[in-house]
Image (cartoon, rainbow, N blue to C red; front, side, top):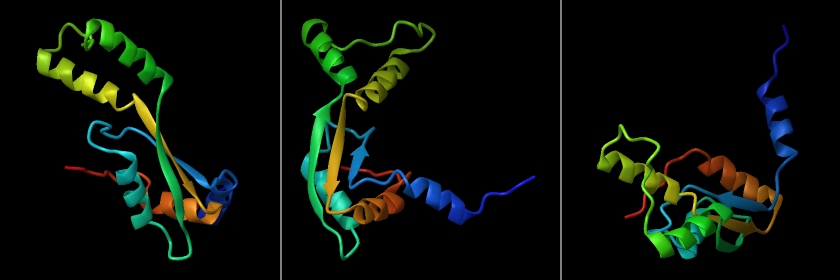
Length: 126
């Protein structure tokens, strides 16, 4: 049996580092590009810089928004055993996928430091 050291894992991960970061699964009704920019800046190393943060609609989001404009929100019908509150919650979770943000930094090192600091940390906005 062979073991992989943490250094080996970091080297494997580091090969895919880019100066850009993707941000997903946010409450896009409450979060805008300025919020994303400030969040990223708060985790930016002193030698790094955030160039910009841009929010884009996903293909899934484009389809759903177009459908909602014609027919209104679509609550899940595939899960008839769920009550209205549970169906509404599923709809709200789907809305997290309507958009995504791309954050551009000055270097791969900056993006990697931000990613390492924020990865898997829940963020809340009020």
